[in-house]
Image (cartoon, rainbow over all chains, first blue to last red; front, side, top):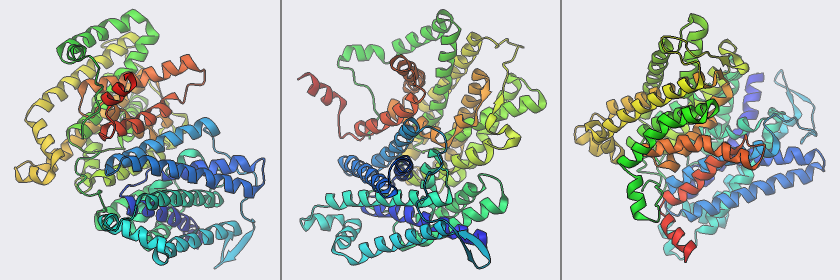
Length: 288
Length: 324
């Protein structure tokens, strides 16, 4: 039961970052390798700001850092135009760069959170104990996922975003400029990634930069459930991956077993549900 | 998509620096420099040679065959750990352990190649990154393999005495030379053509009668073997293995190197090795805390390099813009 609960908590957070990954991939055809790194940098900004300033201010500052990074990434990849594979490699470079910068700024050691983001306590759910903060983080992550799905499905902005994702030529011929939409996708996704990073603090109170950066792999595995294009698919995938990862980690009891479980799930998903080609992402036979 | 090659303003200078003259100069430098500059620089040159070997493993895989791998750190680590374990448990020396490490690398490469038969492009990239994370977290940090403290290695005394930095550097350079010649023959031979066919259009290659699956598996195997060789040599060169040296993110650095110096260029791989050791040296000259110079500089070069390789910004035009 505890494994189930912890899996769902971690899973809802993976859902959030997977939704962010899908948001960018659908609109631009770029798989953002650096998303975990953006979330990591925002989370560490939060931790270090929260040590000396009010928590709310720290949260806002962290999210602003993420938004700025998202805007920069969106701008740079926008400059590359239709070179989507190159843009993906660029996000890979951004991953390395942000990771190294975080090592310089924040140091290479795990950092414990000084103040808690959410009220702590213990809840008894179905015979197992779980932290109140973990439940709040999970609910918050799921609400944010729902909000993004509603935003894309119900609002005029979402309509344009869907149009850009499925028929970019039509959007262009209607005289609409797709660039603001793409940039907004990058910024929103980065902020969501930051929110996911902050929520992850409840599960992982003393994170290190590398492990937060590499949560992009969990997000990717989760997004694969929706073939990288479906937002609800990413939501369900996140929960699944969370369960698999926690079951492997706690069930086997060896550090790294969770990662191995996620990797196995990813390979199976890639073979069973091959991702649907999005604009520019097809014909990638010659890698890079 | 063209490779990134430094276009020197002077065409004549460029012609001299490419081809036989360049290789002759490099060969002379490789023989003289380690001996002339003393043990510390012999160590640095040995390190450059080893990194060149690792970059060549990607030149083969990415440049020749068009496959992407972010699992290179796992192969490098596998090579190093195989040697360390053989030394620790069976008392094998480098000459006995090295072939085993290379074989292990080949085997693991083929194993990774199997999913690669179905995956391409970014999907291959992220799956191999996932594999590198598993190798890093699940395998290299195992307490039975030395845990976070790592393992020690000793250089062999016989049949050839490699205990000095100078001898070890020459050994690394010799193995680099063998690998270079092998890849040279391979690129210009029939296999090279077939790999290029696979890189350009897999389906067309299949129709033309190329056994795409076999060649992909082989190329992953050889790439894994070369990376494992690099890892093993790295272990004997630095005498100590730290699991953090094989973390998944170092794969990003290797990939950055091969993209920046030119994916298909053999000479570029040497430049990659040189960059790997020169950047920290330069950074050390500028500031004392230079340990992060490499992890920062390589991704930065990758980001900048992407713009040039995409053809959106031409280096030559940029230079002309600068002088005008």
